[in-house]
Length: 114
Length: 115
Image (cartoon, each protein chain N blue to C red):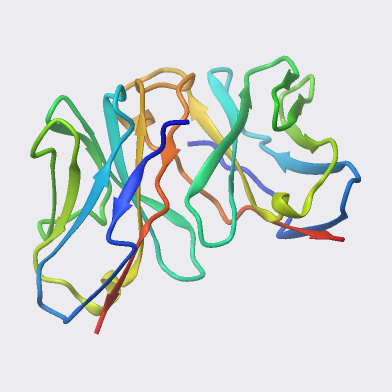
């Protein structure tokens, strides 16, 4: 699986937008970009995913660079509940048994200040 | 909203004992997974399970580990002879199908402490 690089930690203020970057310079054409997050003392939780186009859902937006070598998860208005570790994960769409699993890195620890 | 449940929330066992961690995946999901997270470390994949068979396992998932779907709802992880280094949070997950379009839903985890 291609490697992703994320900042170890970021801080945000409540009700402000947050932009969480992810670099994946060795991404292949068949890799989808997935984001999960892990709230304190909980299991990981799916946030969003995309391939080439920007994506929006009720939780967040995903902005993907034109060359796909980087992406940004956007939380439009951070709340205290968004304090979590955010993981950027690449998943190959060429499904075989080896692509079922999620490979987690260390992620970005987001702190939200009131 | 449907959710993955896990029991117990915390299990304390002595080294060398067998433990069984239980999970109830979301009812219409077909793929099941176990992950673990040692305190302060990354979430690590252990095994995936489909159609009553292991579809993939990691190097961590050695002969001491086994998984089973004993009935239509439960999915279990057994550790035959626990070691101190097995102490971790164990997360069960499920997905409707495999592949990149299908998100995995995680349970709240079981904290296993081996003394």
